Amino acid sequence: MDIPSTTPRLVVLAPDGTETIVDLRPGAQVLGRADDADIQIQIDDVADRHAELTWDGAHLLLRDLKSGIGTTVNGRAVLDWVDLRDGDDIRIGLARGRIESSGSISHPTPAPTTSPPAAGGGRSRRVFISHASEDKRSARALATWLERRGWDAWLDEADIKGGSAWAASIQSGIKESAVVVLLVSSNSVAKEWVLDEITAARNLRVPIIPAVQEDVRYPEDLQFLLQRTQSVDITGLDPAKLARLDSAIIDVLERQGRTNPDRVKLRIGQVLEVLGGITAIAGFVWFIIAGFGAVTNGGFGQDLPDFETVLIPFLVFMGGGLVGAIGAALVRSARSRGI
Image (cartoon, rainbow, N blue to C red; front, side, top):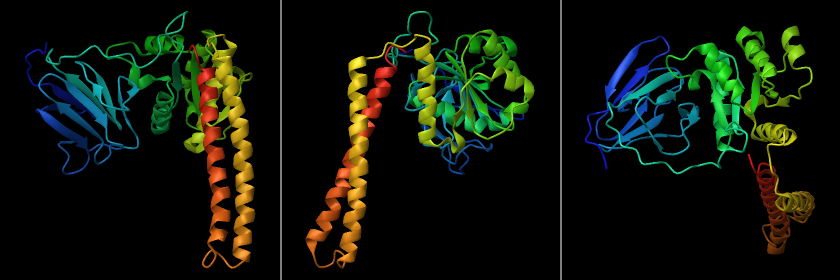
């Protein structure tokens, strides 16, 4: 049963410590920098139309409006409508928001969106992202990508609850994580607290994966800690490179025995990957040869079969790519079973 409500409030905290309190009215309200935004937030990295809140008198919901930099609630990327609760921590660009509802928001019990934690603790999907504050935008983009792949990304500044001791929260966040991903840049390798986080991960025996955003030289202390780790190139946050990071995380969990691969699905996926790759390459070569032949014969203007001779290999190329992508998805699904 819904609880009669008072109006919930959004407390917006700017990077300089300035607080703005907004009483949320019933209906939809857009948050952003635009002049016509219902709740204007004139802070760096906030998009013109960044996010949307809707309040129906009992339920308060939030969604991101394809802002680019993204929106998080309690450190989790907002990928769809999210139910908000009293005290929830919201990140919109460099702005921080907090919901104050005075017990006015009614919440249905949410259905689980991920598999139950594996035996041995609830940390199997948690990925701690160690980064410099100057790289916050890249760290948030990486966190959003990891969330979309099913990982529970942990950003230190986003996931520390108000009033918690900073060092204790960092230590706890690392201890509860399956993997620490170090976002390597000229900024992060120079930070003492990044070194402290990596040292803590080593002491707690949490695997570390350096995700290289910039090709930089490690200081001696950091180089010593990372001397037996395999780095992953993610320059430009390219999706293909990020996929290799995803694979590296699964590799780590496989070596620790935290996965339970589906061998049948894995083999099927591998076969489809190979067949798709061969078909795509053959189709591409066929397409180039057919296209060159069609142009040499005077183009497509007068002879329809010339067009067909190019269309068929193009479809073969696209079909091979699709089969390969399906195979890759099956392989990942099979490898990550049990996480």
